[in-house]
Length: 118
Image: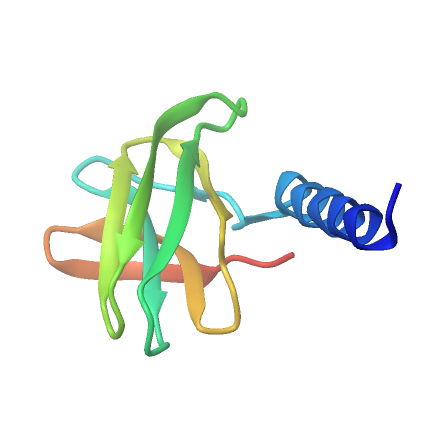
């Protein structure tokens, strides 16, 4: 096999492996009392559109809500929310400029917000 073909094949394999091994980032669990919800929030501090996958998990690890979203530069999105105790968020696609949080909100008031961590 010519060197250029083997180099291209190796590069393709490395890029494919990197995408398949994307790491998820998680938040600590939070609980919401009556009238409050636990939400997953994403903030884009960069200058480019970013894509992120978000899963809101229940305390037993079950998926309560999930989706993939395009976040514009400067945008803050409250993506999914549910009532419950011990809910936490899982993000795939966070970076230095795309940040994820879990928050407990009541109406338009944020009661507590914690960042996702590796």
